[in-house]
Image (cartoon, rainbow, N blue to C red; front, side, top):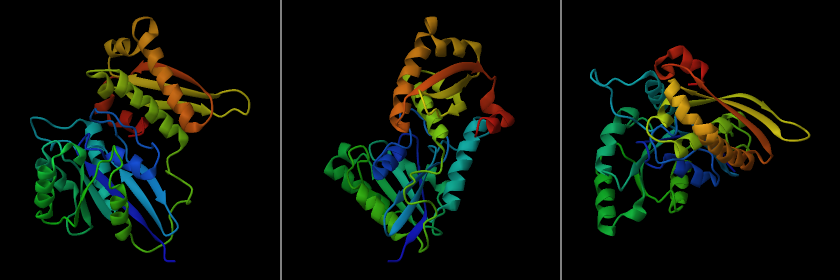
Length: 299
């Protein structure tokens, strides 16, 4: 049996459902998911392997507005958009995820600079169709089918798992013939400590409000597996100001304790072992605008 293997980039506006789609196809949680923009900051590789194919999914940060002189993107946002461009450059096919319930027709102009129309197959995955009337769904499908450079329109509900097989089959049909690029039992090329950091960051997005999720980042300083007892995980959370540190820690450390408790439960479920999680909060001023700081923090 001929084997097909290749890269499929997943792009879309923030909260369109990119990570939910990836998690649904993989059958497990790989990318963190929250209702806030910037939940995904890195390019996440998800591996979906069967006997006859291997899809290397590239889950990307949400595509932001085009920068302007009046409103330039900060260095972090610029690097996130570089991740999107690189993913589509590497891809054998591209899935453009569009939230059908949120001004769907406005999505393509924003995504267009990141779509190499005509050079790689492009499918519009129309998400959240369970929230649409039959008439509205038909209108959107017809609208996107008329747009140049689009090879397919696939209506799905990523959250409810509807029609995800159609997305998989479309992706497989556009993979080049060739050997698997990763072990068949692997789900990602990222190490465990990367996902540990992502889990902590997810809890920050879920439990804190206003600017805290956006001004904070996470770095796993140490991860020691122990033959006896709990694994040791040491994590630093960086914010930009002392006032933000105070909010992150909370009165008497209550906010930090709640976040760490929630993160530890998910980390233990992910690695399948008990862990001792030690989180410290530090100030790194203007880290989002500092190229050296971003590089040191893994961006």
